[in-house]
Image 1 (cartoon, rainbow, N blue to C red):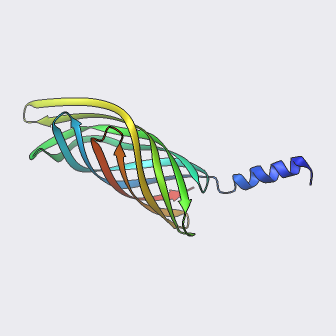
Image 2 (cartoon, rainbow, N blue to C red; image 1 turned 120 degrees about the vertical axis):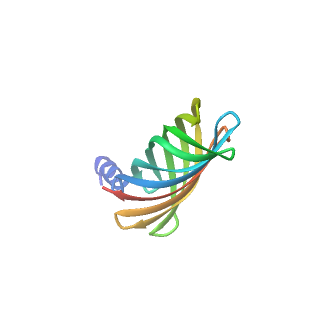
Image 3 (cartoon, helix red, strand yellow; image 1 turned 135 degrees about the vertical axis):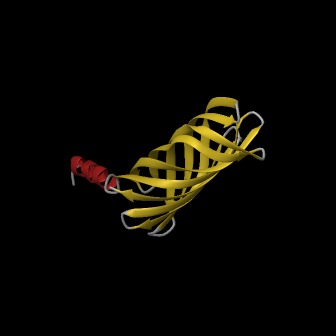
Length: 166
């Protein structure tokens, strides 16, 4: 076998798994988004990603504009407007044909405005994001559950999602 055929075989085998995927998730979060204002709430989000092989992927994640989401902030019912998005690398390790565990590492960007009665406070932030999760494959679909935290330590979350490879 000549060296060109071998190189072609290596490239073909490394991209045999390559695929795009996307999904939606339900998220639960705890955050101190503005100094001394602790927030707990729920939202939904989505991701699109590209997996080059079973061991590494890159994703763009977003939580769409939160408009008037009511959450508990220091015991008060407040409204939140804002958004967040992140770009992450997702290293993964298949445990079985259906189950894999993965890590999350990337950048989180968020902008939040908190309203209570006639008072409004806002803030924006860029921070590192990390986490772990488990993925259960259902053929071309998948279910994932994960926990994340920002590097600053003022935000953590859990997500349960459903997605599809295409």
